[in-house]
Amino acid sequence: AVLGDELGGYDKTKWRLARFNPLWGNNGAYAEFPNTGAMEPGQGFWLIMKDPVVFGTSGTSTPTPGGFPLRIERGWNQIAHPYLFDVAKSDIDFSGAPNVEQTLQDWNGSGYVEEQSLEPWKGYFVFNAAAAAERIVIPGTASGSSRPAGRSTPAAGEWSVTVNARQGDAVDRGVVAGVAREATNGVDALDRHAPPAPPSSVRVSFERDWQGDLHELRRDLRAPGDARFDLVIEAPGDEPVQLDLEGVADVPADRSVVLIPEDTWSAIDLRERSSFTLSGRATHRFRLVVGSDSFVEQVRNGRTESLQVELGLGYPNPFTASTRLSFSLPAATNVEMSVYDVSGRRLRRLVGGTQPAGRQVAIWDGRDEAGRAVAPGVYFVRLTAAGREETRKLVLRR
Image 1 (cartoon, rainbow, N blue to C red):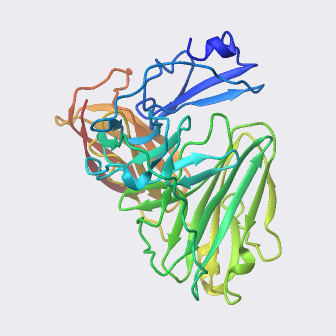
Image 2: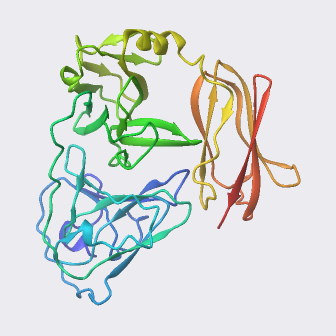
Image 3: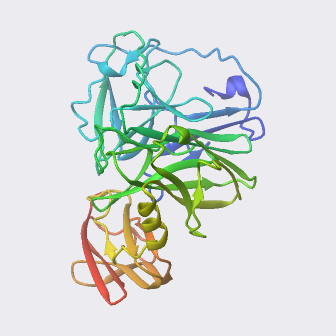
């Protein structure tokens, strides 16, 4: 009734309501009304309307003493705050959430932007890298809205390339790859994870396999030097995708800047061409390579020869709902990946048959072959490929 009074009965041709549930499916998934559950303080939602509507709802105020505690599940969470005034991010208490990325990702209609304040009636995405829920506290006192000062002029050797994609009316803009003096070649505080795209929308991200975990990043900054970025474009709709890369002219002239599609391995000089049309209903993968000519050729000609048969540690691990297991193959080969209990009994086959070369991800949702939830405890996943065997321990918590 909160929305129905103003919008009428639920009609997908007129309005839609969805919420990202981090505990659904393999790694979180969208739930659409009526599966979104009751609206509670602190929750964020996607509301899509055909026509503009003015809301005139009423309710009770939220008590402010002690602030408002907000549970942040593992992975991505859609949050809001229950007050009718702005609260600066710097005033939020993150002391009980050491693994929550202290960024507020807001959708501005054409991409995610990092905000410095919580505003009334707006939703935000926040990311929890832990395997279990953590808690933040939103203070019950107003604070002035603050905006980031913006990046200073890049220092010598620093550069960034911005990737934008459009599919029909859906857009994802402002996804950045680059180098910075303060950055490392790992996943660090300068990087930003990529939130889920709005329902049924195009999504751009950079994949990073770091310390056995697969990270999907919206901002991927490395230490100065030659760099390779794994670009992924997810296009769920039927329409073609317009892909544009900006900032290439700002890359130092002694660096080559090329885009390598993983389906052809041909090198495209981005200084000559930086706009492309891609097919819909597909996931497109590229290597964005910036560096010396010899480095570009090494990436292009080496392809995946530098890879070894390797199984990641599982992320998250321990886990409560599902865990992602990255694995790499130097060449197309027959693969067997299964989950076993401590007695050695096989519970679930995750991957089987011939798989292509490269880095891939398998997901275990804590269920056996029959779809039954297994008990909390210790399990093992075993990967066999190309005469090699890799085993990792997983801890399931409920």
